[in-house]
Length: 136
Image (tube, rainbow, N blue to C red):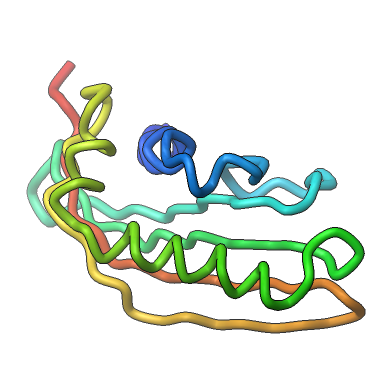
């Protein structure tokens, strides 16, 4: 449930960015076929010791496209836009926190893993994040 709230908060914030309007957005680790180009947000959280409200999370933002629809240059351009969005932390923090389901304290980009297989381009951006959920 916590991961789903964080995934939705990131997804909703990124959906609102006009430069990403052509993407299809998904959350969680599902095996369903995604309509490409797609952006999927996946998170894994653990509570900080002694807290029921504060968590740290690994957040993966997965950008997928296929050469039939998206040439490599366009995939790279979308990835550049995504990196630019992530680098503007104050704006993204405000957008993620807008619905109040989570309060994201901060995040850091820790890795980027690109791959191209059989005409499919996939880049995984991994973030470390700290957040809390409002008390019940």
